[in-house]
Image (cartoon, rainbow, N blue to C red; front, side, top):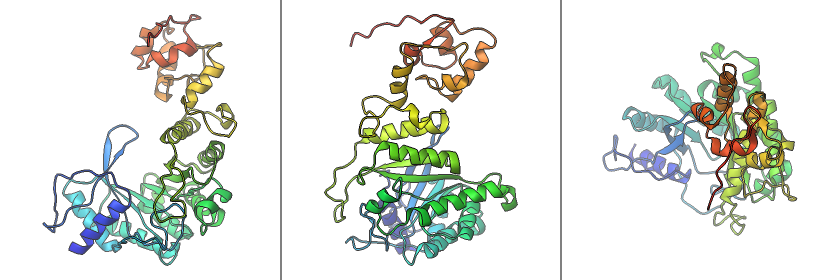
Length: 380
């Protein structure tokens, strides 16, 4: 068990954990330091302490950007599903963890690797009766029954597309097949959700679906990334698209490629949320000639400056979709406006603040009862 704990710590570090000091340094083996804890932000606020790790950092695929690609010279580690489940549950029982994020490098193909991921989750659910959060990866090439079983065990399931289309994926991961291996996995997961009642598997709801796109090294533009994201939201019900900003890794084919701007990553996330939650369409965004979003302002503000600065929106008559296009007004704020104006018109910035809306962002683009609120000019 001492070696398994050391291997798990190494795998967690290799998975890119944020380095956090743990309050407790040991569980069963007093001379071995624990794996680091990843602190994930919850959508409703607060954070969850996750063990974000892998079953193995050995991999037979040769992805051009990946630290775990086959042939790269570094120390690899592997733990068994049983050891992973035992060690995680000890940490959870000690009050150190709230959930598990489990992936793996591929050895022996996607089917064999997925079996091991499923085995680890089954041990936690069946042997330890663990009912908390589990995020499981779907390996490329997983079979339908494996996808369905993974969906029965997890709270979130993800399969990484990496590229927005087959052409870009070929530059990132030459051995992966965009449609046959990756999109098929997403389609199978969506089929499970669309065709079966989760209660038939003893669940209240099916897990949410997510994917990841690598940003930068394949030369893709934001139109490509966001078009794929929009299709995934609309057709397959994905809850989240993660945008992984490229950073070069030594001893890989892309080690000399430039790192991607964190601002570009931020703009993609902002646009992605607008597509998912704010009823924005692809044509609503302003793009540079190269097909990327402007970096100097967020995409919602860019749209509002172009469409509302000279034609402000009357918030006492606007529909919910229109309110969501105003900077500073989100889904909760839009609903508050709709509820409040049914009783009394919204007349001033004080009314907005009472509804939980920060007027500083919204005022340039709205009017209240036919009037634009006066704004104080900034001196610097």
